[in-house]
Length: 229
Image (cartoon, rainbow, N blue to C red; front, side):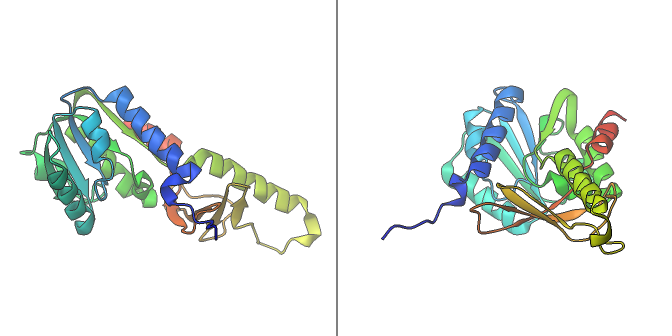
């Protein structure tokens, strides 16, 4: 009897996500670099840092269990680079005061998971980017990965316009709360005609994936403006 079960790691969007992380590390990370990994989770990218031949790693995450798993993974695999792990929220705490004796300033600050968490509020976004600036050496790099919020923004607005064009068939003050394609479904927690710059949450469900993920829209113009300010 055949099974239709597919491991999440084998799904196309997960493979693309892993490819993007590997590519960014190869582009920006030099051998013996000191790396600060924000929202490092359970240490799922430890092998990637090993392959990049970094010299020192600082893993930061708001989850105690995530930090414990990351530390355990690093210790059990005997990776050649030194490492420190800190239970801190990069969008709340002043990281420099906590990790100043852990190898700061660093060559690389990255956020390969959960970058969208910083856009729950404007204060969280500003705090994270202040932390990035305080941790980086002059000439260092910051990079991260998040869902393409610009595309989501555009598609949602087109759905709103299409609903309005239907005329009498649309209930007053009602807007669509989802975006559908053959590859995914995005469902918003709150129906709004115009997205706020911060705090817009949605559920992302990919085709053939059992679980959905909660994300927060990242307003890229604001992110870029804060990075350059």
